[in-house]
Image 1 (cartoon, rainbow, N blue to C red):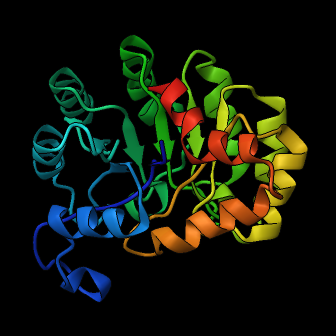
Image 2 (image 1 turned 135 degrees about the horizontal axis):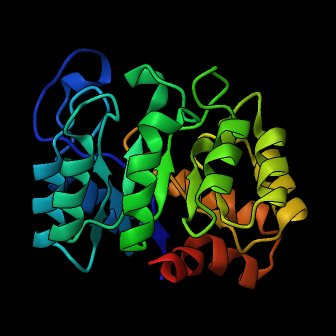
Image 3 (image 1 turned 180 degrees about the vertical axis):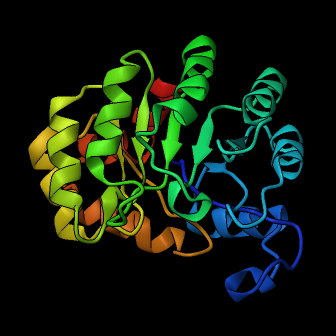
Length: 240
């Protein structure tokens, strides 16, 4: 089974740039079928959070889609919002520190949400990058403060900090690496550095194409079908 954990959907035109074009559920399902993706994780975008739409998509297609609850920790109702959607069956928490203007390692903001992730036994998934808001060592701070929570490090902090992302994953067994945007050599380095069991195939659709991500994982696996199966599905099924 092919599981791609990181993608986005939204129902209408939004606030500029690529968001001007709707990327609704029917479009992602069609592209999943074309690429033979069995299951995809979805969330809204940080610029226009719409957890209701993601929840409806998960309920309508429970065999194909699972949703992350997207919140801005700076909002006073963020914890209540997360609890409400986890109670409804969403599968994890999504954060975007850069676009929402906080540091991932800010305990006053993030710890209350981590507590809920621990309570509900769901992963925390955050955008990671080379920006000062979400560098790999902030993921390490989060992972060590909540050792029972699976922490998914988005994009392997590509392009400049993927080596540091691999380093913190080596030191923290609850950190998982998301392959979207990461270059092929970085995925190969991650397989060599931490093994295949904590790497998750991630396309970040519609920003990238499912077929390209599948090819990247296939090449990075070096012909080892067991490595490919783990990265392209089995690892996330264990988390779920």
